[in-house]
Image (cartoon, rainbow, N blue to C red; front, side, top):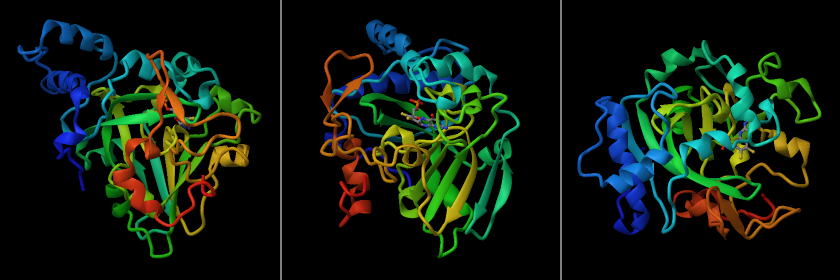
Length: 324
Ligand code: MTE
């Protein structure tokens, strides 16, 4: 199931930074505290600015190497940016709100209910459940519908492997995900004017089975910070970020297409598929370019966020404009 980088052409000059990360990741895994001696001091210092400060969160291990494909100019976004510039409306609507407020969320114990059209429904304790899935590091581009983007290493596993375990029935065509509803710990949920709660997302079953679709439990080698969707969230790098639902407590197999939160909130602006597409503008702004956080100039947005080779076949024959 794992896609590995095989083509030299797919891994370009930008590999310099991921390599530093890879070496540093070995430090996370071994806990030895020593970075491989061959790293140039400059690179090490540059990377130190990207990575989490020591002891910020619990390190995850072991982590094997998963999917990563970077473009010419992709460099890793800093841990500070990834964990300080967020969308998580349950904790407020400003980009800094989740980092400031999400400490109130209790993530242990955590259960996920699996129901709907599947042969093996149930309620899972997350800690037990995670033991059966080897963790992988996957470096993906992350593109928000608002026009900003980042690149960083997630830690997680294939959503498809999890889906299979519950044995969806032949009638199951979609899978719906739901975020925790706990207004006592999620202040944004105390107002129904912000969004309809709980936050809901959905995928077609074959999209969920695509090897790029990830359930993430960490980033930068460490346990997922609350503001990034702890303890478990979706990551769908070919879709706009709002599809990547955070803090999941329920997974439901359905025959009909689920309605996702943003679609319900503003149907003329947000759709079900929401694949990154530079040729289809948002009604209020262009999607042709994006601002990579930490950079000054805007860059061109890529079709399917650069993952057309991996996911394009899912949409053969579909009108991607109609099906935004
Ligand atoms: N999930 C929930 N439950 N609530 C949210 O507000 N925001 C979405 C998505 N998942 C959101 C969510 C949006 S708009 C984006 S761009 C990404 O999370 C942001 O993920 P990040 O903060 O880790 O970058």
